[in-house]
Length: 546
Ligand SMILES: Cc1ncc(COP(=O)(O)O)c(C=O)c1O
Image 1: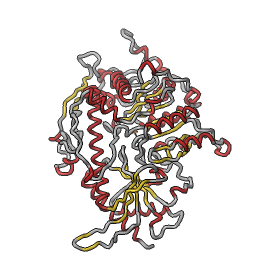
Image 2: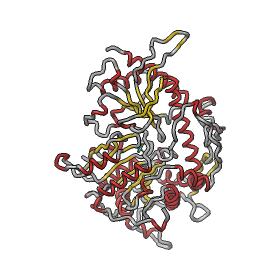
Image 3: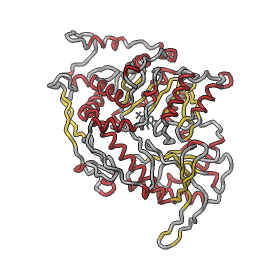
Image 4: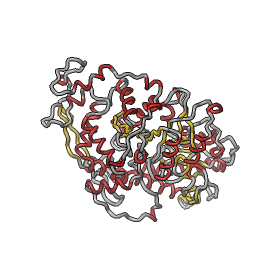
């Protein structure tokens, strides 16, 4: 959308919670605007003198933005998975780094200074970080409303919990996907703010189900007013791995306009848009793209990414949560909100009376890395990361394909409706010349859809195929298999943890259990080992006659 066509956000202040409306400006923080006036002699704040900060400078060796290759075949200048598999682990000699330093008092005005970064600072972000983020958002997300505002937080966990407190009153409900990120639920349930699950298909939350739910909402039978807030993970959804199409996002957005719902878009996997999985033999080597950061490459890459809800948000009803957890490091505890100025101001008030602002060391180092790399360098870094995780996903699914018969079938209902899913059954295995006791069976033990984004494979266990399955037995069998795997040294995420409403009797899920499997952090040799163990344990499990 061209800049001149963008609209101003509408007044959505009626969504603010009672708690949020009651927040006052922190009295001392209210003086902050005067502190920075040139020439002011400030004797007002309890600011320690930077002369006594015990750090004169911080130096770091930072990986070059082109550290990771853009295609699996190209060699990386850093620790690619091949190095981790065949090289000595943590072979730092392969890394290409550049040295950066953040002085307490920089020689050049406007450079990041520890004197400022380690001082009490603005809750919105240090100035250089604000500038970087504003440029980044306008290039990558291109919000459809003009007066979008940026405010940092300590990551999306903090972002969501602040958004809930800012928007919801006890006794209200929050619309969410039927399977969702448990920590998000855990941060609201103790405040008696309850999840209201909406059915999903292969593209995430279903728009027709959302419309039905909202249009037929009966506050009396539901004992809850119609929800006015949605929590959604549209890319590489946690746990299902689904990614929402542009058309679905527009439908969901339009329904939210119709029923006056605020969308909180929690999007940590946005830059892990991995593309479709293809079996090893069907993969064709892609042309090697340019490895150097450049404005043209950044533009081209950004245009391949599915748009954020912000891109359709002509009213300012989206609060987007971004985090550096998956793109730089979770320990940085740094992320940001992009939202309308009214919400941003209330979120800022909340932030300044809790964390005040994210840690100054972290802000300084991340800001230094980003400004050293520049916008194009950071985009190049993100492109390399994408390829790395794509290889991990491909390797993990290749291992499943080696271990099991995978039968491709279109999913006609449920969470994968509209996708090609793989049904896994046992493979006859030869070991030391003997046929293993596991015979090839037609019994489907589990199924999955290779995720096109994120870090997870969501595995559906066909527990109704278990010899001792009885209706209502799903949780027992899921836990039994999960425990057996744990005893054999493999830990998966148990499915029940991700049910938005664990208490709900859902006929669609009665005969199946689930595991969430993360392929992001285990090295390749261990991924392979885990799949081999899983293969043995699940075959034994499905052969059992209890
Ligand atoms: C959907 C979702 N939201 C938030 C988070 C946590 O993000 P952060 O580290 O920024 O708090 C995660 C991490 O796994 C996640 O999957």
